[in-house]
Amino acid sequence: MASEANPSGLASLQSDIEALQQTLSSMAQSKKEYEQQMDTKRKHLTKEEAELQLKMVAFEREKEIMGGRKRLKTEDIIELNVGGRTFTTTRATLCAAPDTLLASMFSGRWE
Picture 1 (cartoon, helix red, strand yellow):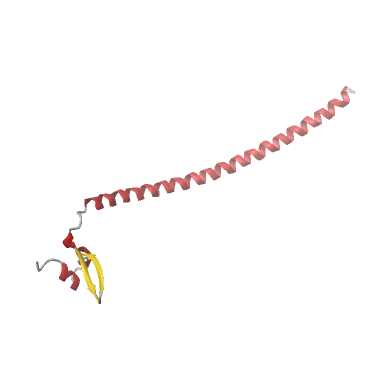
Picture 2 (picture 1 turned 120 degrees about the vertical axis):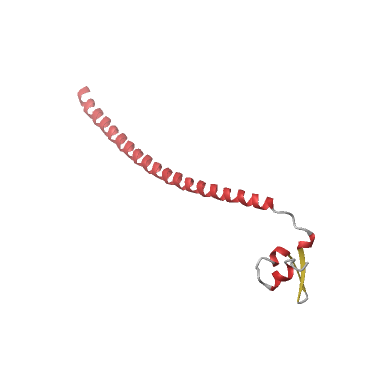
């Protein structure tokens, strides 16, 4: 009897080993796919990080520029009555386009 049980036990072990090898192979393939996905995501995040760094540098520059600007003086704020409607703007806005009527009127050359 022992000799009969041994071959079936051996066949069962071989079957278990084959199943484990298939599982191991499947897991190795899954690991490889996961690593490829993570590599793709890592590259994407690295690119996004670089873009954010550039935006942060640009933002800091803009903050420096804005912080360096002087506050508007009351006389730099101008109200215009255009056809009965009142518009409020700044002298700098009106003078932004040189060689225009508005620029010549509000540039201060005549003061």
